[in-house]
Length: 146
Image (cartoon, rainbow, N blue to C red; front, side):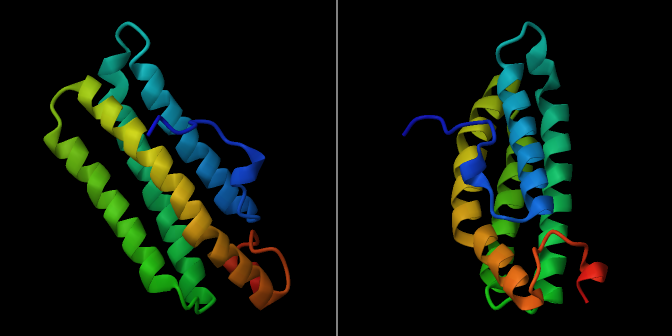
């Protein structure tokens, strides 16, 4: 299986402005990780880029999990387990991999595939649920929905 795309396409949209923006940011950081392998000296940036990527994922996961709680989303447990598994995988990589080239290769192999599957299987369902529940698009802040 080849490397997945590292840039946003409109087909990736789940219909939620906030989630889509966060996904674009996560993909941009993943692409930046891939770019680290191409530039002289770029490999030294791999660990700091992964730290930024983890922070973006943590924020994104927390936002989605608040939305799931606020909207009483039935699929919340499975969705949350996927978040936990990916965060654990990336943290394990950061802690166990010693060479930047290995970190880059592992991250850009694992994360884009996971994002594509997670968007299709989890995020799109959550966005549809939230939009139907409140009768508006789910990109509104939680406080504005009620």
